[in-house]
Image 1 (spheres, rainbow, N blue to C red):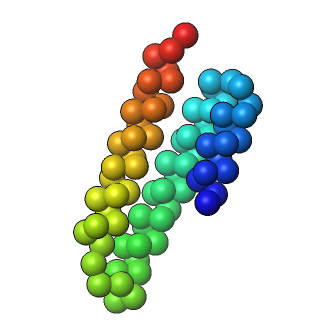
Image 2 (image 1 turned 60 degrees about the vertical axis):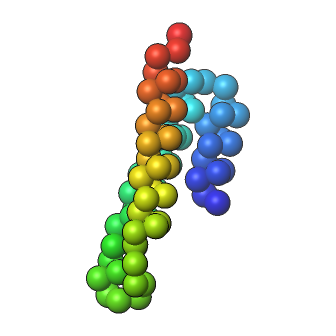
Image 3 (image 1 turned 60 degrees about the horizontal axis):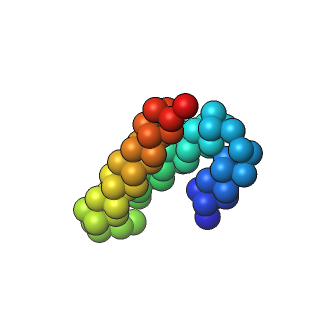
Length: 74
């Protein structure tokens, strides 16, 4: 839910620069989640990461595309 709030905050500021900033914060949070999942797998708390990692990769791609698109806008 933190990610959704960051998107809302960034979009509400009205500045493209601030929106991109909040999107990069989301990327950082997603990276943290990815690391925590890998640790959980190594500690045998979870069995498989395949599906969740595919979803995380997709989200990274979507965020990267959005950030790139915003950079191109004037």
